[in-house]
Image 1: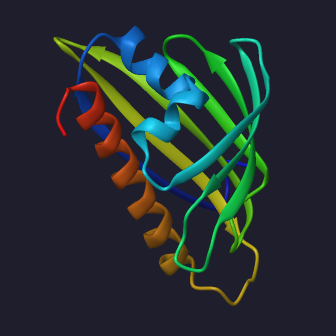
Image 2 (image 1 turned 30 degrees about the horizontal axis):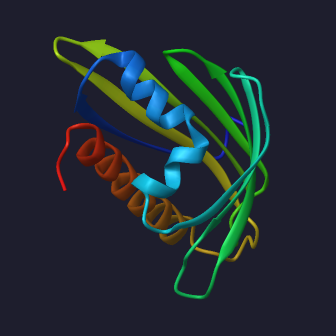
Length: 147
């Protein structure tokens, strides 16, 4: 679903690409990095294919999303959510991990469709962008040893 609404965010994280990729690929470790993650139930993980249910805290109450990821260590994780967050009809995305001198550039791209055509796409994109930026920053702080 690369048509429709797209947004991207990126961040430079000091560290080896394998270590940075590993933190994003390790679903069980997300609770320790992302404070809004209440629970992650891994349904399947063979290192290349992952299926999970993740519950996050939101102002309106807990949200549970179902995600399926296709991992290409250590450079790419593609994602689709057959059970996307409230407000979204469809959500797919990709994280890419590019090695730079002394660091890794992490880029998060998302393509989405609102569940209600009357919903402001800009407002939905703004909400999603906020979550992506916050999560990338939390991964950076954790991996670089900042509190």
